[in-house]
Amino acid sequence: MIAKRYLLLEGETNGFPAIVELPYEKLSDAIEALEREFKRLVDGVFGKDHVIKYDQNGDAELIDDDGIRYSLVHDGGEDSPSFFVHDGKGTVYTGVLREITIHANATELERGYRQAEHKYLLEDAERHFLEYVGFDVDADEEDGDNAAANQTFMDTYGFSIGEAINDSSESYLLDDMVELFERKRDCNLPENDVWENVVQAVLMRCAASRR
Image (cartoon, rainbow, N blue to C red):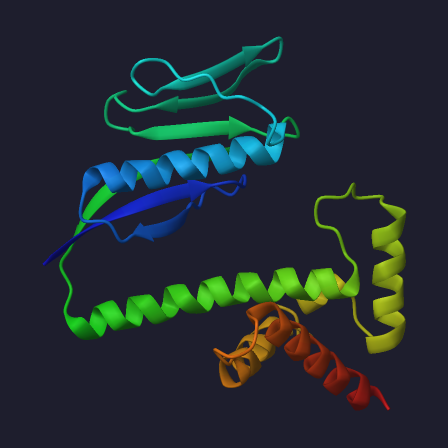
């Protein structure tokens, strides 16, 4: 039986939070990690020059004409410490601290760790792939640059960017990228450089298969 603290983060509309393990024995350290994540998100939405005003309890709240834009609460019942941040574009980022007691043996814990690691690597692969092909996921649906990037990709590889990141597509590439990354990563090389090499290698393989 192992007791661990987790930060549950949600920044999408699918209702499935990302679970981040907090390797802290002290509750105070875990709370500080939650506070840092809150500030990081506020900085990302409002800019690093924005000053968060905290009260004597360390709580914070910003209300404007559009309603509550962000909130940090340390003692608000079951769902606390917790926070939420509105980005003004329809996405609400939330975080809540949880302490979970795990009943698992070493094999089950290792399996769970590997599954979580694979999930995070898939997310990294998607991010680096989209950056490499010049596709901005935050742009409007009718964005001309994205349309041009997708057309160039289709002309080169014979399938769309969307198909490349859709795990139900026959042209799905992210698993191949993760597999190659796990073989090529090197503690002596910056991780971003390894990802760039991996994306290039997988796409070169796709281009060669069309010839």
